Length: 141
Image (cartoon, rainbow, N blue to C red; front, side):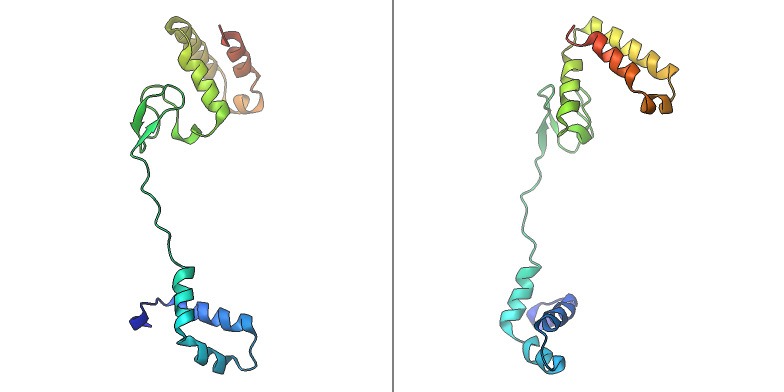
């Protein structure tokens, strides 16, 4: 096995191969095919890890267009979390917030913070209506 650069998983893989063939005598069949170079190559190809291209070093934010390190947890410009990059609703909402004029955004943030201070987490989960009403109040203003 060492001469063929095989790991310990080869024996288990070969056993499964033999059992699936349903031979009359598994021990003889196993011995016959264990050193077959075609099966050794098949095993190596089965577990061959495809080399993936290296991940991008930078990422362009879909909200503000700011290019930042891909390893960052959120965009340093608009604070879009990396977890929401592929959530179209979250991206749209963040674009809306990011595009607000500064004075309107400040008023929205104050009302939002006040709402969060006055509301428990369970209330927010149970009835999202207050947050929705706040967003409707400022939407496309």
